[in-house]
Every structure is written in structure tokens, then in C-alpha cells.
Image 1 (cartoon, rainbow, N blue to C red):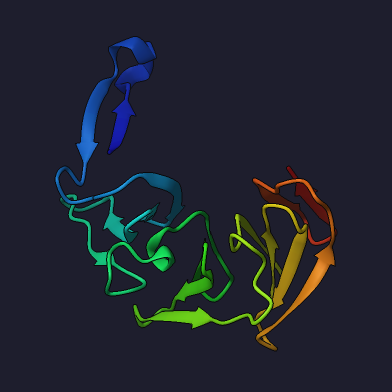
Image 2 (cartoon, rainbow, N blue to C red):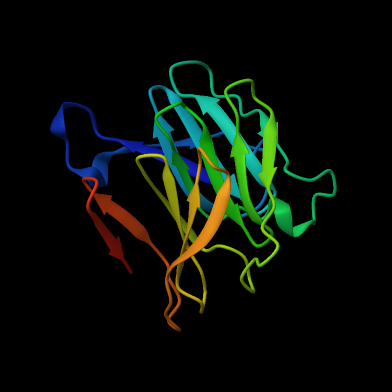
Amino acid sequence: GLYSLSAPNHKPIAQAQWQTIGENQITGAISDLYLHNNNLYIATDHGLYTCDISQPLTTPHFPLHPNDLNAANQLRHLCMDDDGVLWMTSPTGLHALLPNRQIAHFHYSDLPEGGFSSICYVHDTLYLGTFHQGVYFFSISNASYGLYKSCLQPISALQAIGNDTLLIA
């Protein structure tokens, strides 16, 4: 499930109030959270959920495939580009929640085994970690993929520092 802990007036966290978010609405394990303005995006193994944290907590569901057990619904990581497009990785590849709330899929014929494990956005480019084949890139403006850096270690996280440094874990 998803919970929030709040400790008003700088009380010790041990005295924090525990609140369930989206109780009985979010199904499946949660793999990532992304907050943009008041919109919380929740990646699960049953698709994407969203909620406006300033409103009563309801969680619209955006499955990437109509079959709830399909691997496309097993979201791993989230990031957002400068145009407000939410990008998502899964075992079946790269997906996006467009500003019109439609889901788009970006097919890659040479998808690495296991799909993409992590994602990071840097100025018109998505960097995509894999489990044993390194880091790929996806040019948003050209809708094209390529290998950025090959390595045999699993890539669990990517983080950009400015426009010229990519941290790879």
C-alpha cells in the first residue's frame, strides 16, 4: 500500500500520523513514485495510478494493457520531461502518459532481455538502464533508440546532474 507520515510542528517522527493513501484503490506492489505539482504518479505491477494530493485521495488507474497480468503493466520507474509527458519503463519497453491522458507505447525491435529497469530524462533524451546490457538512450524528438554505454552489470538507478553528468547505479 501507499502511506504518508506527517509530523506537524516538527514533532519527532515517532509521533507522526500514519495515513493510508488510496486505500483499497491501489492494487499490486508499488515500484516508484513521482510527484509533479500536486499530482502523484504511482507505478505498480498493475499499471499506473495517479492522485491529486490536494484533493480527497482518489486514484484513477491507467493500465498499459487490458490484461491486468500482462508484463506491460509491471511498471518499474517513472520520470517526466519538460513538456509534462510522464515516461515509464516496464519489461515490455518504454511507455508514456501523454498530457491528454492517453498511453503511448514506443516499440523497440532490439529490446534488451527483461526490458528497461530504470529511466532518466536529460534535455530531449531519455536514458534507460537495463539488467545486463548497459544504458540505452531514446531521443524524444526523433523517436529513436540507441546504445549509450554497454556493461554487464544491472542498472538499478540513473540520475542526471545538470546536462553533462549521468550517475549510473
